[in-house]
Image (cartoon, rainbow, N blue to C red; front, side):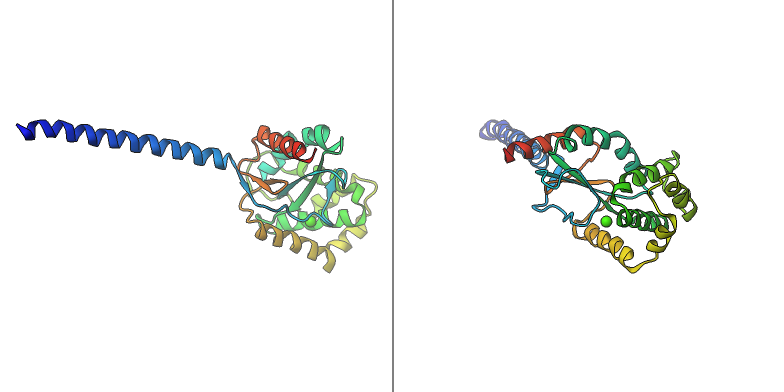
Length: 228
Ligand code: CA
């Protein structure tokens, strides 16, 4: 009799505990999601001194892209989001945008980085045009393996920009100082635990998904509000 009564009671207790455990787990899960919120607070922004940067030095928000000329997603990010960022936030002095080289795809990544650094050294004004035109050369095959970033490509791209001295470019690409610039970028890649490209960092916060443009805008707006 007692047994018969206590059994369903025990069952109810167990079910209740299970339900509460599930609800607690769900709440915790949601909390951790909202805490992560697709971003990670790094507490510091990569140093941008000496790095190609577009926008006012005084801009309160720094957006850094770690990118690789061999990376199809970087080409896509540059085409889809950069123009909007520049138009809406860089032009009015709110944001400065910096590009740092990542060498995830071997010799071609390195060659492209050496060329871009050399262009930046001889004429910072020509950098962004070269940068964009080099990405334009990346085939739309959406793979990392087809070989395209060669010295011929670099010379052909640089040759379309009159302000670039081709001889100086090739000379600088061999120089120690340009190799050091590329090494500096690699050291930053390690320091900031960049594991994928593009990696986008807004005032010390790393986006989990750099293609979540709304989140980038939200972060920028939050930073701007904080500075007012
Ligand atoms: Ca650099």
